[in-house]
Length: 320
Ligand SMILES: [Zn+2]
Image (cartoon, rainbow, N blue to C red):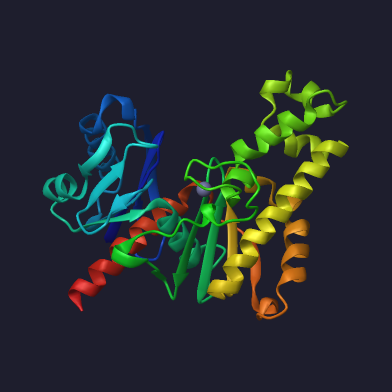
C-alpha cells in the first residue's frame, strides 16, 4: 500500500504520522523535540519516530516524506532557519539526513502552510478552491491554498499574516512594528491585556486564575462564558481585531473559505459572531457573501496530513 510520512515539527513537540494518499492517518506518534539539546538530538528523535510508526504499518510502501516545520524554513535548501522557536536550529539540513536514511524524496514546508493544505484537502476547506487558514495561538499564522497548492511568496517565502497592521498606535510587536494583529489578538496579547484590565477591578477572572498574573487567554474565555462583563468586553475586542485581520485577507486575496484554528480558536463559537459582524460591516466592495468562515476540523493532525499531501504533490509532479 502506498503511504506517505507527514511530520509536524513545532517548537516543543514533533508529531509523525503514516498517511495514505487519500489523507487517512493510519498511525501517529509524538515526542518532545528538546531544542536546547541541539538539532542532532532532534533529528535522531524524528528518525526513531518514523521507524516506530512504519513498523506499525508493515504493508506500507513509503513514497515520500513531508515536513511542516515551525518557520522560517529555507524550502529550496531543505533547511530550518529557526533560532526563535527552535533554539540551536539555525541552518539545519533536515531534508538531507531523512532522504539518506529512508531513500525517498523529502519535502520541507512551513508548518502554517502545511496545516492549511491539510484543512483545504480533507478538513474544513474541503470542496473550496481558495482556502485561507488563520491560526490563533501563541502567535497568529496565515496561509493560502489555491486548488490544493500552497501559495508561496518571492523565493518561496511564507506570508506572515499575524503581522498585518491593525492599529498603528497599538502595542509594540517583536517584528519591529506596532499594533500587528498578533500583538493584539494572539494568546499572550489577550493575557497581557486582560491582566492590565483586571487590575483593581472586580472580575471573575482573578478568582478563576488564582492571581492577577495567572490570567491567560483560557481564563478570559472561561470567564466570558460565565458572563463576566470585563471578560466579555475583552472577547468582543479580540473578535473585532480578528475580524479586521480577516477583512484584510478577504479584500486582498478573495478566498471562498477562511478556516480558523489554533488554541484560542478552540472557543470559536465565542468569537464567531463578533468576527462575522466586522466582516459584514467592512466587506461591501468584495463578494463577501461567497466566503464561508469555518472552524478548522483536523485539530492536531492538520500539519501531519498537510505535510504528507505537500510531499505527495511533489512526488506526482516528479513522476508526471
Ligand atoms: Zn508584528
